[in-house]
Image 1: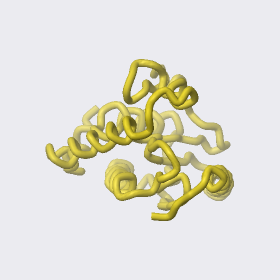
Image 2: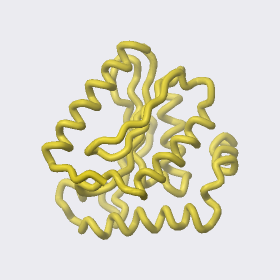
Image 3: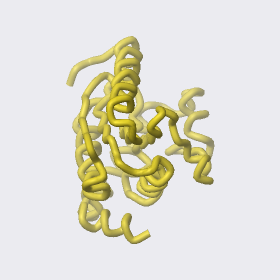
Length: 183
């Protein structure tokens, strides 16, 4: 996999923001953006690719014909799945927060929803608290900014979640979809 720098990461974020704005302008409907919460500069690897491919397939199955455009991109930010969705933004955010909360790999994902005007819908708007750190009870954002945990500890957590997902049959998309659609 390609080696990236911090500058590459910043440039990739800018390009993603431009692409998001272009999609919103073109389709004028909410947009879902999914990334893996993976530390460091080696964000594209077998693990992050497997997570994105599996969960994007699940999302496509869950949202079905409501998806009017989808794209998979790989950059310094790692693999990113984008989907333009014909759904009210709050309803879409509710669906993806449920996925984050209930799916085995949900904690490993960053699922952002933008309304048709480009405003990001937060978890707090739906009454959910900010996300907690993988490794402690503090808010994830605090730990990331303070570099409270070593990179390998976070990677080991993600690897363990993925191992549970694959070893214990949690990767059955039909089962996961049925569970997510029941509520």
